Image 1: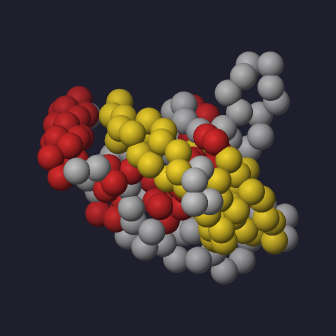
Image 2: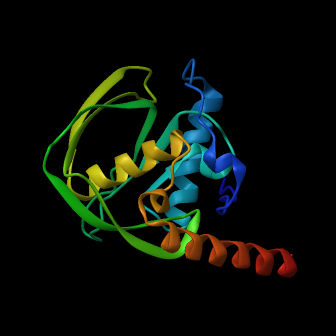
Length: 173
């Protein structure tokens, strides 16, 4: 089921999310809905608070090529256990901040541990776009948006654009 994505500013996007206590059937369904919502948007990552659920769950799939098999990953309670000193800069966007992009500098590689849909513990080291995406999505679980890395003027400008977009969407009903 495709879920509506919250648009910034929304107080639910700034909340610290609660850990997922158990990987229940409901949590599995939530992860499946999030993947469908992400692919439909289209995006490469989505965090539970973006659909109004304050749980520590993210989904992502950074496979870009038409000829490559998708690689959807659902991460419950993801934790970055190591970050490279080397940094990389990507032009980031966010499904909760549509059509707005800005360069953000983050560690080039990160190691992440999480609980999978199978209830087991997983660990993987990510680089490139995958590393940027997983850090961006984990930020969401901590109430942080990519625009929080920007200067105050640029952040205010984007926030005003989002407020205007929300007003226009509300009028369209």
